[in-house]
Image (cartoon, rainbow, N blue to C red; front, top):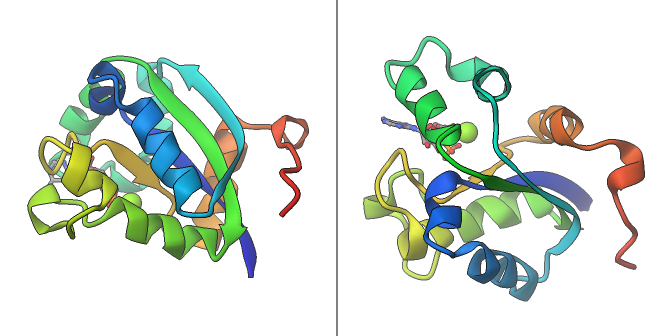
Length: 142
Ligand code: ADP
Ligand code: MG
């Protein structure tokens, strides 16, 4: 099934100069970037994006981290894009991530873990609409 998912290259990976390597790995996996933008999240934007985690003990620190520098937000499209990208990302904690995954390669720790990817079709739709309008998405011919 052709799907779209939202990806974020987080501030740690952008600061390390790794966004190019990450977008390359995404395209090498067969997924296609159909929209992309660099921005620095405001506190309000980060809090809104991670609203589901607002009761978690790490919420304040996560918002601090996500606003600490620029990110690259992008929309990825392809066959089963949501689980395909989650697999490419690897486990939330890089110590538990499989070899070759983005988090194994680029994450610093469980918080500064290089990338975000939507976890369901419902959340992908919400997260894509958080950053992009329909007119921002291009046709890559897949
Ligand atoms: P994922 O990004 O793999 O879907 P979650 O949705 O559980 O993981 O968490 C959202 C983000 O919150 C993680 O990517 C990570 O940056 C941060 N996070 C998750 N768990 C922790 C934790 N125990 N301590 C600090 N930060 C965490
Ligand atoms: Mg999540």
